[in-house]
Image (cartoon, rainbow, N blue to C red; front, side, top):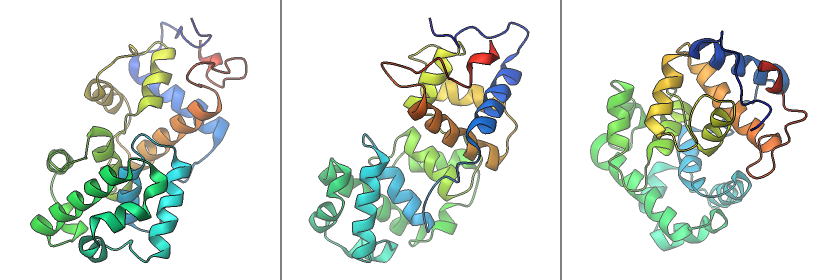
Length: 225
């Protein structure tokens, strides 16, 4: 049992989730995430970061910038093997190149390569459409919605599940959509809060809530018990 695994009984779901956010924000401060110069760069990063560290994604994005390819029309025109070579640092580069091309092809076919047109309608409808694209899963779709399209949806990742299971809110194997609904239901629906909260959870997991050997002694969440 982790030191943070027993939550005070008087805290309800909403209070507990808000307390975790406040503790993390007070400890780490604003994260200014997602680091990118444009919406399409965010989307590229969301696809490339699948199963790899962000430092590797940054190297791939630098390659794309140097080749002047962070542009929807140019991404449409570039050959998939050339794109794969540019994003090689991100790992699984052949597959990820196909995923990037699939996204651009979808955007071209349905929205004439216009991200503003993609962003029309309800978030749940946009999410459903994104999930139909090859290579776009729930986490990637929600990252695109939150960080590229500025829609208030909560992103769940491995770090989120790890932290919330260790503080006693959920099971380790909780389903993505179940945890997403729980957090969204019990947290004020604000774009800035959802943005910061997810970034803070990632920061905390890397700093303290490490997978195999968490650094519990100095964990800022210990005093919520």
